[in-house]
Image 1 (spheres, rainbow, N blue to C red):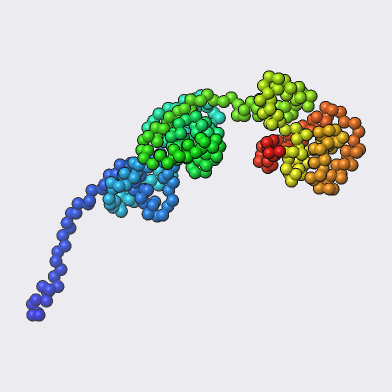
Image 2: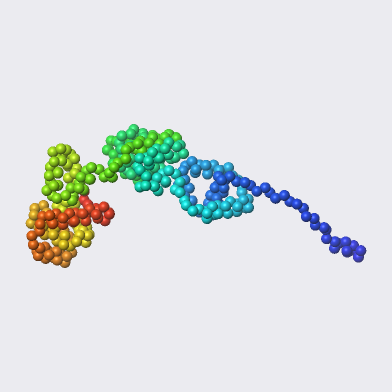
Length: 358
């Protein structure tokens, strides 16, 4: 290269600043932001309980995700930062939905107000009635299978969890169970809206039932009262009940559990639990009074035979040392034993043998 061209080769071209307009920042709606957050969390393999959302919200979220394509990195960072800021600023969280609110306020509002609110929520097309129906106990659902059309019962069995459906079907009379089971085979072409309307109608019927003032039925309440009543009073009341309503009296007799019923209804291996719960002086008084008396001696011997021989020997020695026991003291002692058994049964620690199984 000629010498006079060298300086020209070393000349650096002038660099001019060129203004570049940045891409416009995409403004997202709240629903789009929710879709971005869900998509981001799913990409991180995060487990999301989306099934807990109402079905209309699940559908809306899925539709929004189907409409979106690409989101630039800056927009994603901005949405995530906004989401985290909202989480950090949360002071209280509410359950969402009227059913969650009623569960939280259970015991603080009247049953009539709760039922009215449930009826109002059921009337909304956005509420899935089957969510509440599924949560109901089987004893509330069984009358529907017994009294409603078999087609309605078939739809209900199809919507319930398999275990609960099997339990309900097992409680139906044979002919009714077969008809409902066959009707399930005819539900293949039922559209979702019809299923929702059936659920709404069933839920409205359940909500219109008047609230019960007592958790237990009359048989259980009378039986519980007579359990701790003096034997003379109990016998007189049962005789009166048999004269007025023999069927009711028979059911009450099944619900009664007295000291004399111990051998027939208490599992032998549960006997030590009873003796640990009753004060020993009361246990000695009950056993000593029962010894030699028809109908009661069997219960005393049952208890002594199913505890450790050392404890049984000690109790027998104390029973022999006791003098005459007044009937009132004996009634209180036997009631203490029965109360201990009922307490353990209520807590689930023991299970009594049912009268019909004896």
